[in-house]
Image 1 (cartoon, one colour):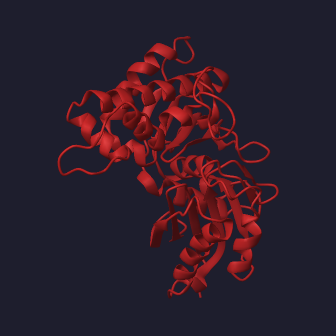
Image 2 (cartoon, one colour; image 1 turned 45 degrees about the vertical axis):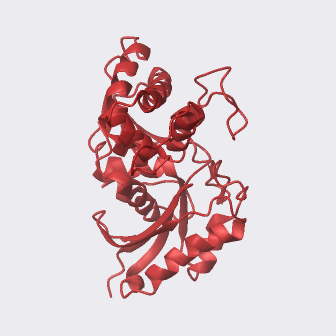
Image 3 (cartoon, one colour; image 1 turned 135 degrees about the vertical axis):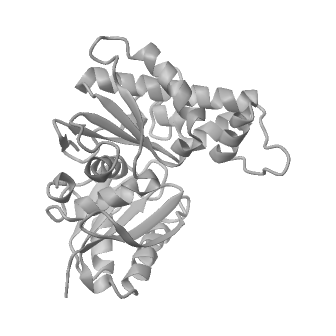
Length: 321
């Protein structure tokens, strides 16, 4: 019997997805459910293990050799624990151990969601063939991962590139991470919608979506507060990207996640703002790219991690093929 699949899990503050992924990065089976982010720790874990159990009930499961997890962070890949800012009851939660138990002892590899997206996009997406790239997820939170010199560079605990918690407003709002004025506190979908509502915006007509997708639709119609919300988000992202480029000399930034689906409502002001912030000669040419794998990048990157050395953060192997 062929044993050529990895069970990939992508855990975010809004949704948890799981899939069976083949060696070519193809997704063969998939399940998705809402993340009960404010519920007790075991309830959140149950969402993960239930999703994996649904895959395990299918005919392809005997071909699975490992599990790769991309989780909202911070993560501690060395300890196998997670402490996502947007999942408050998971603090030093032993995710690797618990998922290993739930899958009958399969090897489990943990990566941060930003690093998972970077691995996926470098393997099969918009960053393929590029050597120095920041890959970002802009969704419930804002995360990132770095490809430098053609390799994923996750750092000692797996959090390198976590651009969402770079401060771009020194006197800004307090972020749940404890700092002030973080990129995430301004630019995430959650905070785009929060700011728009605080400024008095409400969805009009039959559209009752007061979240980021609703704000994006209103911005496309030219409503001023939604347009300002996305302008504000874009400027925060641009400031963080420019700071990263100045530090490590990236050639491009790849942006995925649910907020990226807003399209030019986000990307047009982002490119304009990046021109204002990235002014030094060696950062002026940073190209802004839309994630080639869309919202699947995290799953594909988690699968790449699953083919690496078990229980470590390295994605040598699949991601480099």
